[in-house]
Amino acid sequence: MTLRSETGMFVRVEVDDVVANDAAAAKHLEGVCPVDIFVDKGGRVSLVEDNIDECILCGLCLEVGAAGGVRVYKLYDNDALLVKS
Image (cartoon, rainbow, N blue to C red; front, side, top):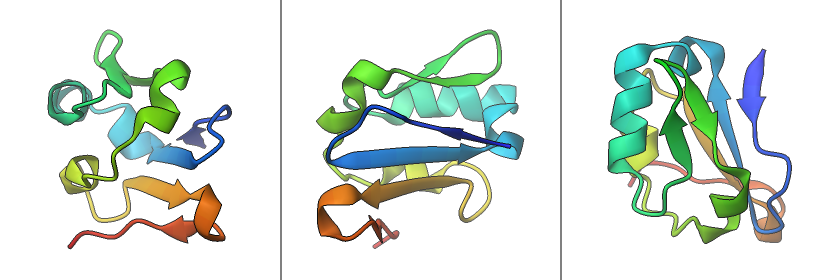
């Protein structure tokens, strides 16, 4: 199962369970996101739905966990996947 944002109009965020259940990844995601999309809830990643559309597409979250563990889709661009630059 994948953790997936449900409220974004411009962006959708998905986090694989392997990353979502990793305490170190949860802490890292919470610390790295400049718009507070991720929160560490007792060693598990949770998404702050109210902040999803605040995403600035910085890509810092894509560096956490295995490649593809965190995905950001640009809904305004035919669901284009944000990729590491």
